[in-house]
Image: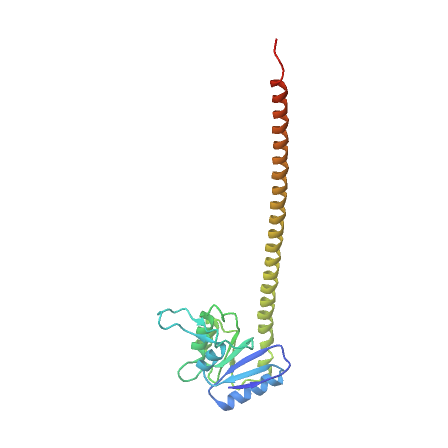
Length: 212
């Protein structure tokens, strides 16, 4: 695994079993001022993401392992299509089936121009399909996809803050209402006590009178 650190706010995970292609895409991404992490297989990409499957439960729903979760946010995954064991298409499917990672944009690269393969990847959720050798012009197409995801994340964060503020406001109003009700109850009890005392005094005055 290789990681190139830059001041970019965007982090790209590049996956390719060919060291030559891997170095090429890393150089292009660094030229475009992206932070880059490179791995040589789909399984290592999933491992980096902290992605795992609960085999014992026989569930098809992927999950994340808190102990393996990467500390650096991944804003986009660019992967080769033809790789041993796990193809780029297989990696794409796993990412899009995950409730934790499905929002990460995925771009597929391939040296073979096969229309059915391209269509299948795009239908599965890939943002782009680049033919190798990848060029800087291709890499420049990545930013809008990452911006879209980042804007969506910011909107979710703002909605969460707004929701928390509404909950806090409702709790304050509820507390104020409870205090007001308690005050009214106390006033009512005091009034009832005064009325009972007044009635008792009246009864005692009448009881002291002699009726002729």
